[in-house]
Length: 322
Image (tube, rainbow, N blue to C red; front, side):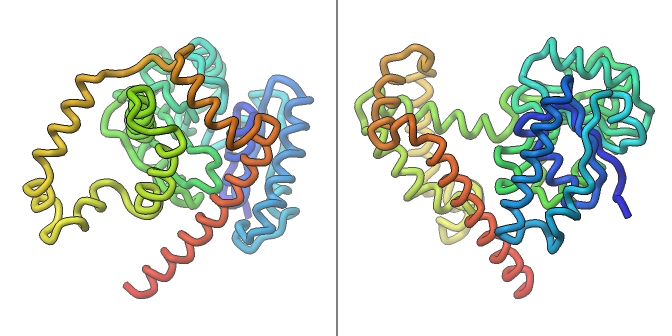
């Protein structure tokens, strides 16, 4: 028996990933796009990706055919939305486009469906303010590829019904994702605010001649990243002082503040069209030629899959010994 119907609006990469995850969790999925050719291509890709997940035992004991049977395409938005309990919008990052798409959705839905955007950077207030059903709107932003990286950022607007936020958080957990909720709208949400801060400091390290691009990457992949793959910055400092966070702040806080104040004075650097971009690009191309990027992306996804499986096994072990 189906868990309910979900409408996926937009059949690109993220729409296909959401389709797989909802179908794997037992939901009937209707994929909408503006052309049947795009829908057909998406359905082929979804089945191929399900076969990849099945090969690493990530379909929760189900067959590819069983999961894929829950996915269908719809060239009509009205049909895709009919009877759906959740709508996941997966269109390009354009405020005018999202206003148009959500306006069309708004005219067709009831007062119960949850209307979620997959946006990585656009807050609900920027596209949903004028909607009749704005209290049902929020952002549920996945990280690519979401079937291997479970984080989902839940971003309610100031007008979002708290019950919608609670229900969406529960739904994400049911899908096997790891939702985090913003307490207010913020540019960049959580993940990109953290990611961009590190990226900008890495950029300055190269631009100011502190280290090479290669050594910046190594400092993360062979240093910080090993810790961060299973715990966050606050748990890291909690474990790095005998008496926890407050002890850490007493021991190291003053020096951290001094370093960060220096970084603040250095300011953000231009990335687009910069000489530093040329330096970093050249370093990356020396390691991985352009014609090998697709191969390297597959390597990345394979490593992410292995890490995801390992983390899931360790979580089960931790819970079993608790």
